[in-house]
Image 1 (cartoon, rainbow, N blue to C red):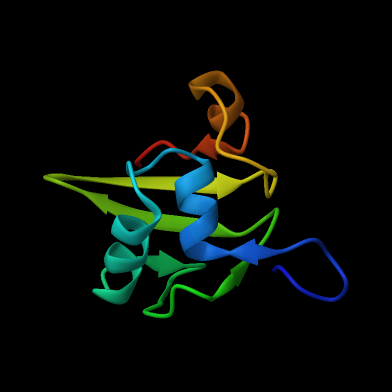
Image 2 (image 1 turned 135 degrees about the horizontal axis):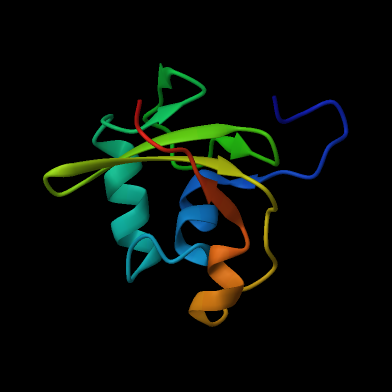
Length: 92
């Protein structure tokens, strides 16, 4: 969904801004492992552009989180700011 002139950001950087993991290198490793999905498709490039409207399926330990990106973010701020970057999609 991202693209066409819309604001985008690197996937690893977005995960770091949204506080999914503590370090950006850990975010890049998570993406590089190939277990993360972007809009239902496996992705393994940390530089993959993402933007508002994209859906991420992120494995987190023994659970899986599905989130819709609401904003790209400009920095790694406090938790409240990070949570405003995405909306959780409940499991069916």
